[in-house]
Amino acid sequence: MKKIFIAIFLAFIITSCQSPKNILNIKVPVNQIIDFKEVSNIRFNGENKIVIMFITSQKEADLVNNFISGNSKKAVDEFEKLKNDFDINTLFNLAGAYYIDKELDKALALYKKILAQKKDFAEVYNNIGVIYGDKRNFKEAIDNYNLALKYKNDLAIVHHNIGVENKVNNLYETAITSYSKSIELNPSDANSYYNRANIYYLTGNFDNAIDDYSKAIKLAPENAKFFNNRAITEAEKTTIYESSIKDYTKAIELKPNYTEAYYNRGIAYSNLTLFDKAIEDFNNAIALEPDFAGAYYYRGNAFFNNQKYEAAIKDYNKLIQIKPDFYKAYLNRGSANSLMQNFDDA
Picture 1: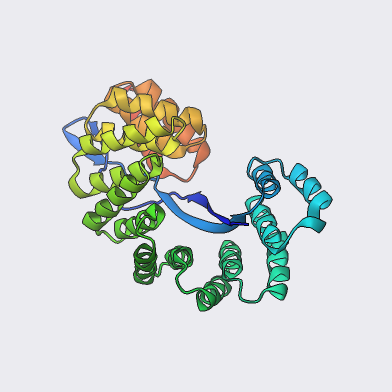
Picture 2: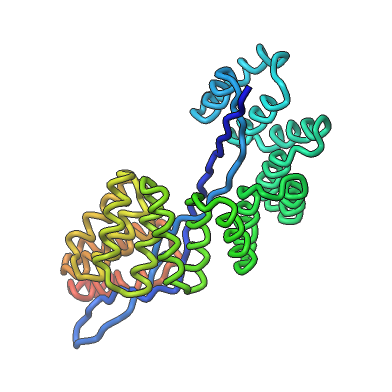
């Protein structure tokens, strides 16, 4: 029976606290301008790891889909009924389903059982590498990826995952080399372009980053995070926020509950002094993530700049509740109270 190859993409969102160029200014009396930097200036989407699975029957597809949809108990029950009929590829898929269900040790045990029967199963070594990466065991992850390449040296996914592991460990040049090899083997891999772009961004190579994000978008125009991260890079490179706003807007169109894109677009609007629009975006970000400290901070700044000091103070109060050690919130709240002549609270 013909094998159908699928790759399960698992996205891990990270927050990157870069040194921003777009610092909001809060104007205070006597023409003094105070720079209040960010809690976290942007929300930057991180890398994808790829787990390999082979689907050879509808039974296997149903099993995997039950895990992916969160119905793991049903999947396990079905497996118990059918396990005697399952071949090695189906066991391989079950291990992948355990991984999706965050049952890492069960997945690892099953992969090792498979290797006892088929030592040269390269895709198993790839998936074991992913598990050890999740367990923050860099050496075991890389060792297993190298074993995968020993048995199948043209697996682009393995080079991709090595890139992820090296990036996590701040080995940026090595990661770029791995992503480049992945792209060489599979030029249609949008995720390798995207992941390489992330490293170019982090190392300040904005032209290459924008180029790779654009290639990723061309290959996968439905992926909202590609637009989000390109927008961040465009803003860093040019401080022409209108272009970034277009990308953030596209990201939101593709993913209406995209907290990071609302937040990032709010910052872009703030930098254009379009504070009403910024407030609306921060409102949406807070509705989606009620304890989002950065959104309260920047919304408070936007209220401040609109001379809505009471609303600003409420946001600074909430920010202090969430992050009591964030001193700029106290400073901003004091400035707002002074402007309202609430000197006892300043």
